Amino acid sequence: MRYAIDKAGFGVNRRGPRDKAALRRQSAFTLIEIIVTIVVIGISATALLSVFSSMIRGSADPLIQQQATTIAEAYMEEIMLRAFEDPQTAESGVAETGETRPNYDDVQDYNSLGTNQVRDQNNNPVAALSAYGVTVLVEGDALNTITVPAGAAMRVDVTVTHPAIADILLSGYRTRYP
Ligand SMILES: [Ca+2]
Image (cartoon, rainbow, N blue to C red):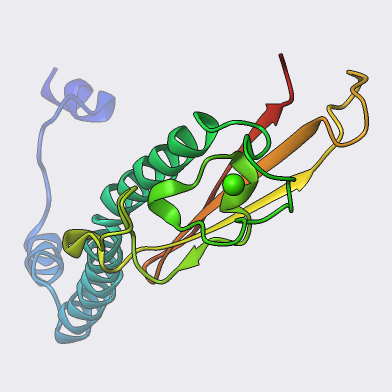
């Protein structure tokens, strides 16, 4: 009866002395296996650390991008609130003689406005935003399939720069309307 159980393999251990010695030899790691394990763990740790360090390095980028976008939106809002053309004199496409940022009175005055530092609408530098630069381009553009008279639509491009991120470009359209 016991022999039948053994043949069926129901967990009866009938190893001889030689099998036990072989099992004891196999139960420990060899020096080569330990060295290989250490090398594999070392390579894995190096790869993980390089991923973490690149994540930490880039973790501030979203904040800078959001700040740059907000600066671009502020400039765009200021520009869009101006008249399409100069209300007093013939429109020149840029700021008319004697006009400076605090008394810009039309959209096209902002054309080619460039500064290596963010300034408020009174042209005072904003110290906390000294790392950001702003350039503005205003030029005539078509409105895709919408037909407008020549020179009646302007595209305003506000570009904000920062050394840590790619430039942020915000474009808006202003039309001549009554
Ligand atoms: Ca003007």
